Image (cartoon, rainbow, N blue to C red; front, side, top):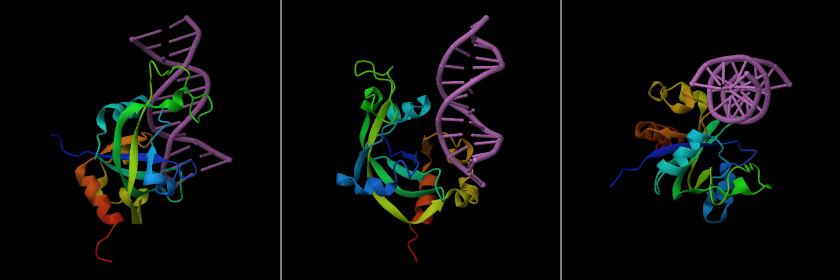
Length: 159
DNA sequence: GCCAACGTTGGC
DNA sequence: GCCAACGTTGGC
């Protein structure tokens, strides 16, 4: 019996946006293309079915957490690595010896008020977020406190 | 478009 | 195993 964990996934909306995820059949997609070892380890070993996911738009105007999703399939080999026509081919990864992994996520909630990076930087209880301190990591952990605070800002109940 | 940060590669 | 060179990310 383990408790739910929380994560943040980054995507450039010009490449794949939260709207794209909402437009998928069953609002579910493979989170493929991650080619960083630390992020790979998180995808492969740590993210569990039912875990909460923040969907973050990087390189966007503005950069922001735009919604939430849930993990619906745990780490399995990223088959796009051995597809030479994919966006991120890596010939060193094979079906027999996969290097890269992915999870499936399903969209949950689109924030009525996307939580921008500058907003996050202005909240003292969010100053330890990985997003703020190690900005290049594209798959990163989120504490339960950070999860709750950003959900409250993104989906205010009393408006 | 610039450029700082930082992850990866490869020569030694 | 070190570290310089290089490539990429991503905020601004």
